[in-house]
Image 1 (cartoon, rainbow, N blue to C red):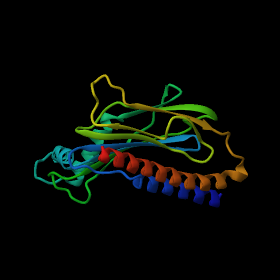
Image 2 (tube, helix red, strand yellow; image 1 turned 90 degrees about the vertical axis):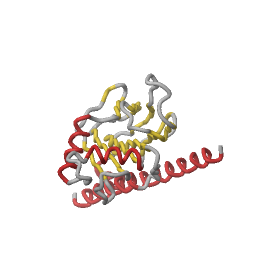
Image 3 (cartoon, rainbow, N blue to C red; image 1 turned 135 degrees about the horizontal axis):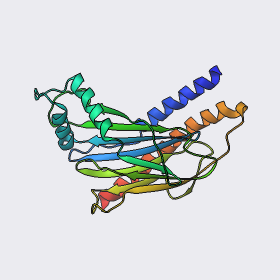
Image 4 (cartoon, one colour; image 1 turned 135 degrees about the vertical axis):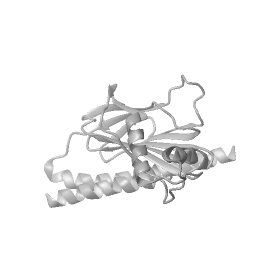
Length: 235
């Protein structure tokens, strides 16, 4: 059991490092958004990361500074997290047309600077949906329900663990710029096949393999993002 617990801990650390290293980029003029669904043993962990540049980050910093003293205190930052959590998630995940529900966790990173001035802000919304996937085919759909100010790039991606197979489409869907109209739907559907649960003697090996697969998946997503941006730059 201790070995299994250690393997689970290693997998969680790999997931955290994977989200941090998926080649997310900051733009001074607006907000880049990265939505990632990490799929682990039937669970779906959705992370909605918004990287706000100088303009959008500055606007949010001034909103956080409710007493107007030019600095964001710990209490003001905590109040901002509560307010964002009250607004609810801005991504709606569903499996086989069944909406998923889970508590929302919100974090706000100021990069060590508490000034209520033009500076970047990172806002992250996280939800974990246990037992969301079932053995066999699953249609996971991620739908953007609300957009940040001055949105530039929006990317929706999945990270697959061993055994999970993407049966249709790609593991990364990107949108450039704001919506063309209020009626435009921004969503991505991933058709996945989940194998039956492993026998108990193979659980630890499966978890270790999952960590390696997530690392490889992140590297692939980062490479495709660089390639896509290289193409955009040449056009």
